[in-house]
Length: 215
Image (tube, rainbow, N blue to C red; front, side, top):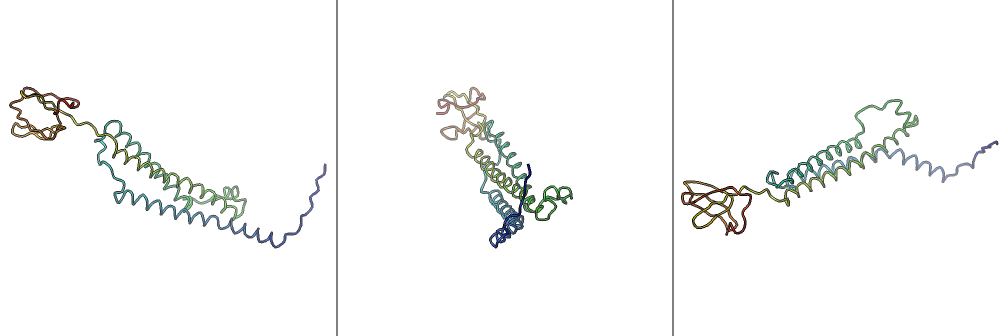
């Protein structure tokens, strides 16, 4: 079987304009991606700096105040946010400025087909991919930070150690606030109560105070 190939019709002006437009589009693709990456890098950086630096995201300063296992959950969320933010920063810098290395001749020929335009287009595609992943990870970092701070806001507080003081008039239970000159001050459900330890008949540590024990 013989296949005969004949030249097609001559390109008219419309074809020339379309080809020139495609050429310019490919030629300008890398600068456009670089400019978009710079804008996203600056915008995401300003967003995170505003949220963290100006205290817009602020919760408990000590996660030890949270009940178990909420403290560990906050730590894992912050670690995930750190990893996502670091990776996002690297990807956005990669998209904005390229890799910190020279392009080898072999890679230039493999991806660019031996032409500068082809190499730039291949780099534009890689930069666009890095930009997309960087933006997703940056937004994920923000979401993880919000989740961590929200957990410190709404997570249950760790129970403070309580004591029960036995007196002739009944038992008093609460959290120790202070003790001085033989007087012990407790924080109970009904407010602060000061007891004279010399008149108490016993004292014991309890996990929590029941409503009946703190009238």
